[in-house]
Length: 81
Image (cartoon, rainbow, N blue to C red):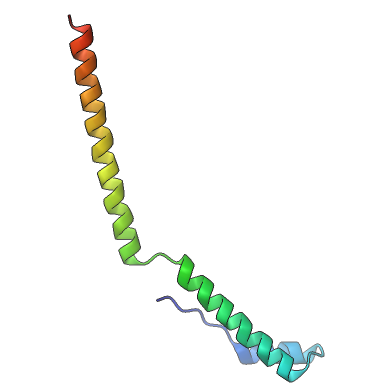
């Protein structure tokens, strides 16, 4: 699980400096922290995800190679007569 560093206190202080009420600023900081952590968790590929994709890529390469070999064998048979 990936994590993100988000300084909620600094964010609240910035909002308060421009006139946002403290309770509103705290609620906004918590909401933003939650949204950021959820988006990071769903968008970063793990080592397992990458391994699965590499496995699928290898399988596709073998399937394409076999398909090409069978196609070439059929074409050889058709045009060699």
